[in-house]
Image 1: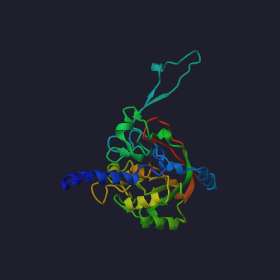
Image 2: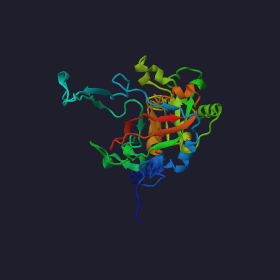
Image 3: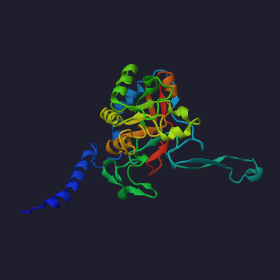
Image 4: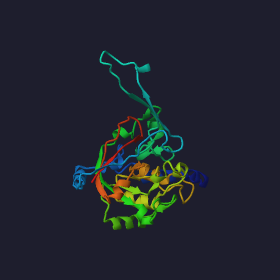
Length: 312
């Protein structure tokens, strides 16, 4: 029988710990080849139940307008150019004097209201379902876990008004939402979470845009790890709200960078919806609604600018 010295066993221990850690979150519960994570919960029955929520027929766009002045995460930017091809100096085309406007956009896909796919956030270069960056990330985009794989999100949406919970027009940056906080808001609004839900938080944070862009990007209120784990266990498809990361920032419990996003996207396959404008929903007390999203199918992108619609 082969024997190992104490030194050899000590050297092997970190590898054993890593293997155990990996087994915690991949392969996915949806199978080792799955690429859509919690979107598997969007069954025909979930869609039919969500359609039944429509009572007034009122529609709510949930995106913020995007231009070059919109504050964006760190290195990101957006720039749109109007180009009138062949129409310089007032020229037109053909005897009917045809003219047109064309736009060229030079931008990051993660500016403004956005869908963060489950290939967007990783843990030490390992992404959802154990996909290693070296195997699927290329300069032309990802070959797995791209947003083009994500089916349309047609499901029940709920918005939780954290401004009323804290009695603040703008919830202070750094405020961590606990499970007790979320449960209190759900009870107050007469809601119970269901499998397949999209859960959005209204914090008043969008009110800072154009007034204090620096504060808008330096801190934010949001869920912590305890709440993230509880929400994931409810079987939600996506979480998000009116902030730029959808989690409390900076992390109040240490130096970890965006641990909630790591947990939700990489470990649980749950999507992040950022910069959702829920103010009109809150104004109308439309706490639950039909949520509809058909995102642009940018092949190889892990995130994309969106304008989801709530129908009440």
